[in-house]
Length: 58
Image (tube, rainbow, N blue to C red; front, side, top):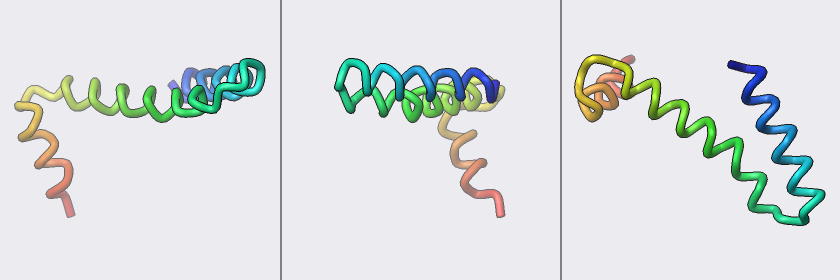
């Protein structure tokens, strides 16, 4: 999975410089956010219960 995120990052940097669109640099952050949400959704509890559980860990 690490290689997928590295590939996304390298491609977004390449296309940001090639197309001169700095918004392309936000693609890796969006990919990580989507991955995080998918991983939370895979937990058998409800979504907000899972988020509450994650942030209540000490």
